[in-house]
Image (cartoon, rainbow over all chains, first blue to last red; front, side):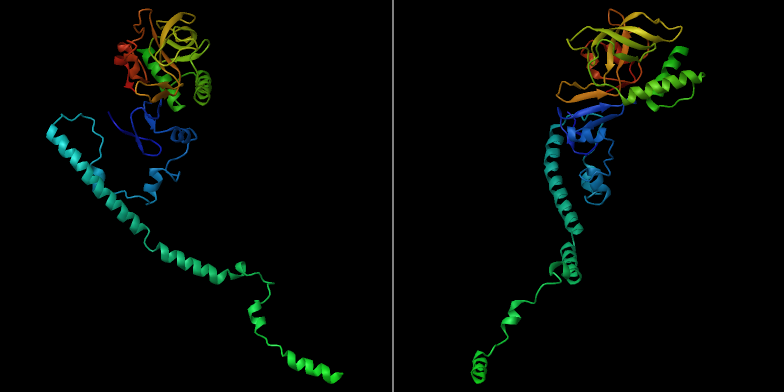
Length: 164
Length: 165
């Protein structure tokens, strides 16, 4: 049993899944699902389609160089079965997975460093420069300032009486 | 020898769309157009009556037309045997134009389910000519063939093939 990689999105193709296309020069294109197959038929380049692994690797979104990737390799010669070796391999898989997960998290954290500050800076800039978008130009002054003007009603009434 | 090189050229030509080893330019032009149509408009259906198939061995035939699928109501699929009539043949081959031959479909553009549930499909519809007993007429097979032929008892074709997909 061999787990192949999808030609388009580089995800794992489990046995019994997907479709494979054999070109006349005997190059085999394996696809994990019809989505990838359709994208291939549309002649899309996986390096330009944002959701593929190829794009993410190319644009530094994912961790690319790491020693944990060295373990996963295509071997064309079948290994001779050894119970002890298999046991230790199974144990190692878990540890390696854990290490890789941790490193990926670190990579993501490093990549996202300064994002919050940047966003705040941009928001501040927008607030400073684009305030007229928030406040309409012909809007009246707020009523709060108007309310502060005191009108002396007593005095006015006295004047009226004088005229009479 | 000449026959084998010729058919080899034909195969390479259909792959790359450009080959300049043919002496006759008219022949080349006609081949180019047919091969271009072949690549762009290969219909992905069953191999049925009047389906044109490429012959990928050195039997001497170049193009055959299916006249009967020996299995299946709708038509033949990858690995099935068909009866075909030779439409184009090269001079000096074992097979002449107009002859009725048996053939095994070794490549089909229509996808076929594999035993594990996945599917496989090829670039074109291609056939290898066999006799009534199922032994190949030619001595070479060009291009990839599926390993399902083993199940259909065409081990000879598999052993002659360049690539097994």
